[in-house]
View 1 (cartoon, rainbow, N blue to C red):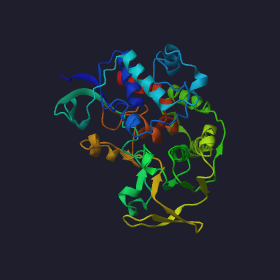
View 2: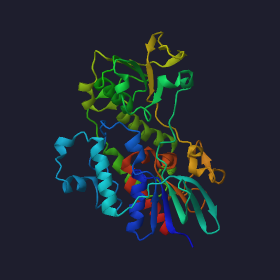
View 3: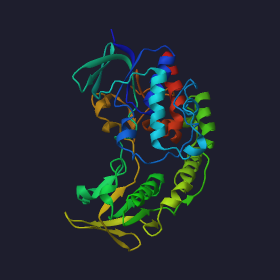
View 4: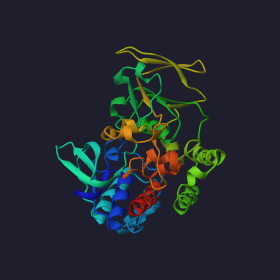
Length: 377
């Protein structure tokens, strides 16, 4: 007899949302992982969110982010933009309200049996479950430039690794990428005394002005109203929506960054890319750009985003040969179920089949409702 009906692996926003909604629907559920581990360990403590109070975790629509603000008597005007510390405190509050009882233990491996699934944990114990929902987030999916390994380990980091900056005070740093993380990391480098920051990216310098993410609402609503909606769109329709995300997410960045981007320190190297790297242990690295400029730097931060690769999720190693995958993404049913019956995947790894909005916290409540609804039939 399985220990639980549903085992949720991961303890980030998508996992919290799924576990909470499953319990709301009467499904016995266990959730395993370091509570909000990626957000606590792999994001800077002094960063801010692009999202607002309307991006909730609660599929039931009760314990929302806005409800947290009201419960804590917080003034939205003085928390705009929202510090990551406030969001994390909200997730603790959410877990408490929902009685999630997150088990702070990592899963080493998951296999299938005639009775369902068996998960082997890092502490030597096992759990059995009828169904598993994996919410691996983006921690395993860091995308790196092709030339990245030419740099000594001490001179390179991905944004998911570079969450403190004091050791780069007085340093010359190249940030590779041009989205929010690139320019926010540049701002954080300024805050911590970097001598020079070059932000290198192929597209034009983004505008820094207020944007609205409200256009996402209709797409999420369509996904819930018409299961499999995203995959039913034509390629031009999908590309048009992707272009909206490009314009809002990459070509327009938050205006509150501007005062922190010291013009005497930060240079935007728009329309360029790194074409050659010369590096040696203990010496500055030399980056040759496509416009002929050569940058001599002490450290390189890859703000190059993430690329799904389900095979990179360690605890799925025992199942990966059974899971149908396309371009690193699991092939999912309209209910987030993989080709392995009873195994569900939500979050960033679901974006190929559900659209880019499911790589953002915005998709948490609807993905929980859809996945749990599919489990319950």
